[in-house]
View 1 (cartoon, rainbow, N blue to C red):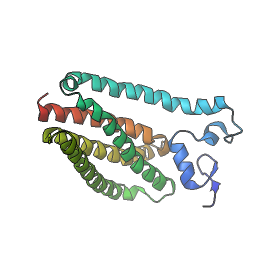
View 2 (tube, rainbow, N blue to C red; view 1 turned 135 degrees about the vertical axis):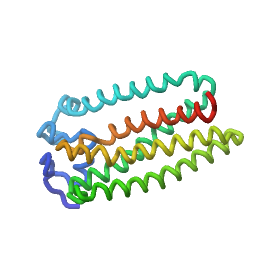
View 3 (spheres, one colour; view 1 turned 120 degrees about the horizontal axis):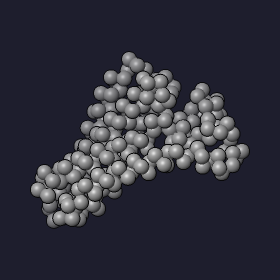
Length: 214
């Protein structure tokens, strides 16, 4: 793929790679006006630390939410073991959508008139993907937890809501940023992921309390 100057940060990347590194908050050319090997480790660290600090506080918020439901998982410890699965699927689902949307916005493929169409498309995709993964999670619990269908239903619904939230956030946040004249790449996958984590954890334990009576 031919390389060219990025219109926003003047970095000589191919368009897709440039969008990806800027979405991760590590575009060294934009932040430092230097290439990777030209910038020293302090410049690299300074360009990446703000994202990491933000994510620390966001993760602490998610941790506080988990601790709020401590009584529930003390009654059924397996509920805690499933949390990494929820958080992992939130990251994967959110990254898929936000990367595609940021790329489409950057090259002008997705315009203002197409926002509603894109949202509807991602909604259908999230329903299909969420339903499929929910079925996988339900089947896994049924097969490994002695036909515990209630727990399987909790996991399935939790996965479905998490994927729905992650994919819809993956399209809404970049579009909102574009509307507000903020670089959509700054509303990147980590932000989508952490918000989807919080929504997913809340939904998961809410379903657990409702269905399992915890």
